[in-house]
Image 1 (tube, rainbow, N blue to C red):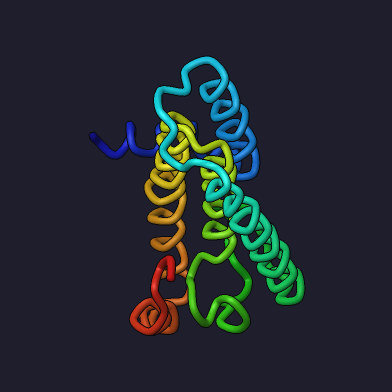
Image 2 (spheres, rainbow, N blue to C red):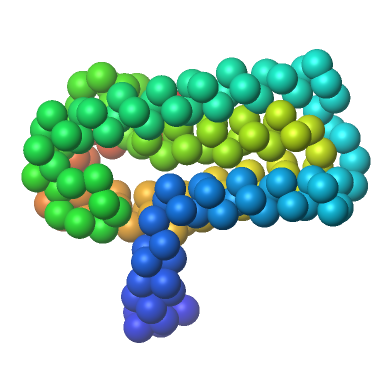
Length: 159
């Protein structure tokens, strides 16, 4: 893919923000679970563990958003960060907000328990990883230089 196509592709993906993508993924999971459940992969009552994953995901998103607000930096993907946040959840994950979103969407998939929602959750993870995180890491590396590179060496992308 040439540079112009990459930019156009990134613009299309980035025009829909991760919260909306999570909502779309959840709606698609519910529709597929209802119309094309295929097979039950996570039977109940084990599937109820999805509620715990959803709760942890929401807590991570809220906590991470508060860290951004306290640092006075924007949450919007692909905007210039004013601060490199390294405290709180950011000590263990470079992307706790995205991790929280994956836990939230994955939790819905586990709660539903059928194969098709789990496939959507995997797709959601891939969209975040390839459509947002990789590009944002390049921007942060350019913006914060050696500080960000050191942060990358010491803190994992997900966990």
